[in-house]
Length: 318
Image (cartoon, rainbow, N blue to C red; front, side, top):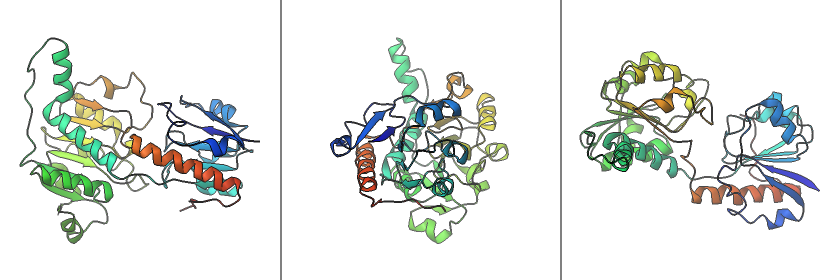
């Protein structure tokens, strides 16, 4: 009998999000709702599993980890792209890597929620009212403000729609963006430096890659308006985290709405948590019932197809 590990099921919803009945008769399935950072502890937990189901990039599988899992045959990731899995190393040791579809809009919706929260102080006023206070802050409106989008693909394009609906001036930059492509998505092209300097709200929607790691560094952050807000729902390492903490601590920018971080889960003592000018969410951009239904139903499909020696949605090395 095969042994299947379902990782990082924080909400304990993997089993109820799909019909695991077809798999249960052919394999032993164990759901894990905690997260392990330590490599040795992770290997000890997973060493006897032939199939591992990963949730996005929560648990990395670099070459060093994969080589210590000799029984592994199938590694499934939710989504069709996972920068935390060394697909080539997996293939080299005979491990098939498969993925699932997802939904593009939930992360864009969360980004907009963070923008609204930062602008209108929703979380702060909610907490104040529950503490017996009334009208403690002065917020800002969105109409007429400039929204800068770093990345104008599926997610950035969706946020551009929201920005235009709220009457904002939408500008955008990415490494391959042209004026014509920006115009097609109702945005104006701007250089990265111009975007950082002129935007009232900057929202990041580019993919993490060697080119974009550390893209928003200290020099870029210092271009921002003192009244500007930074929103990141893409990947933590795109922003230099220590530089961001520095500008927030010194009130060089108005605040930040963050769903992604260099280390996840974020340690409770991390300064980003204790700062008053941040809105922090625990990487929940994709965490919706609709998304999870697709993730887990297609995970079961991948397992079933693999058992039948006809793997589907196979991910190959880039």
